Each structure stands twice: as structure tokens, then as C-alpha cells.
Length: 251
View 1 (cartoon, rainbow, N blue to C red):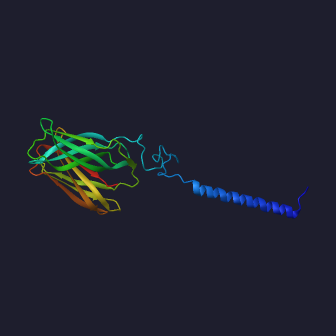
View 2: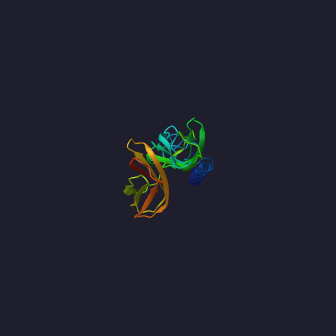
């Protein structure tokens, strides 16, 4: 039986009302029970390689990260009863760094008995080589014969660097012949001020063995400016042929 005009209109109203009601219920369900994919939702989604890591997330999955490589470590007497210790670390995670990484230096005497342990933590910025330096380690009247270095954390959290590293470079590096003084000019060619720049210096002899190390932190290096940095080593370090300065930006 054909519907009258009023019947058709009533049916249309009913259908439209049903569609609107269904749309409202679906929207309400999505708002209440569905959450957008994020890098902090505890679920592997949105192209992530693991739970909240990889893909678009800043956190690098542990399976994709490389542990820092300890290239070498040494300790040097800088004054009677005091040593500086340095470790050279290679960061193989290109474009990524780690924050507050714990480590320890352990200094031993000629009988391999522990003299002192110095612990600390450092940021590993997204650069290839990172010197870690501890200064003024007191050993009393004991003699240090060997050194050990190790990271305390079995798993290190690596994150992608999302900022452009500062365009700072070294100019006019000058090393005194007796190895007592090293100076250099740091140039900031970028359009932004650079804050918290750590500068390390290591002196090497003709055999490539490190003989001295020191570090300094520049709280502020203004944009389009330069600043001199100076390292000194008391009465000097003999037979030094090369100095290596490394810039470690905050990130």
C-alpha cells in the first residue's frame, strides 16, 4: 500500500532522527572510550617500533640503540695526592643522546687494592666522541697504578635530538711548548645564544697516549660572538705534541 505524503514525511523524520541519534552515540563512545595515539599511551601504535618508542617518538627503542663504547680511560696526577681521570666515549647513536648517565672511576694501587672510587653522572650529547672527566680526585699519600671506568646503568635511555646543534667552532688553538697552558677561541656563528657549553681538553704525547685532561663550562656564549677558553696544568706536562678540544653542547 502506497504511503501518503504525511506518512512519507513522518518516515523521513524518523530516519533522520535515527541517523542523528546514532551519530551522537558513536561520537560519545569515541570521546569516552577512544584516545588518540601518542608516544605516552603505553601502547604500540601509530608506526611505533615498540611501545612508545621508535617511529615518530623521541624515545629510541632499546633494540635499536647502541651502548656507548668506552674507547680508553686513564688517570693523571695533577698535584701531590690529587688525580684527574678521563674516559673517551664513542656514541654510535647518530642524532641521539642520553641524559644523566651514571658512571664510576676506580683508582687502584700497585697491589691492585682500591684507593678511591669517584662516581658521577653526565649527559651524552648527540656527538660522536664524548670525553668524561673527573677532576681533583684525592688519594691521600697513596700511589695510583691503574684505573677502571664503567657505566653504572645496564640500560641507557636514548632520545632523538629535536634541536639544531649550535654552530660553534674552535679558532686559534695554542699549546705551550711545556704543556702547561692551552688556549683557544670559541666562535658562535649562529643567530642564537649558546648556553651550558662544556669544553674538554686532552693532551697527547708522540705515541698518542693521553697525558693530561681538563674541562670547563661556558654558561653563555652570545650569538655572533667569540670567547677565549684557557686550560692550565701547573708546572706543565712534558713531551706533549697534540691537544684535542671537544665541544659538548647541552641538548
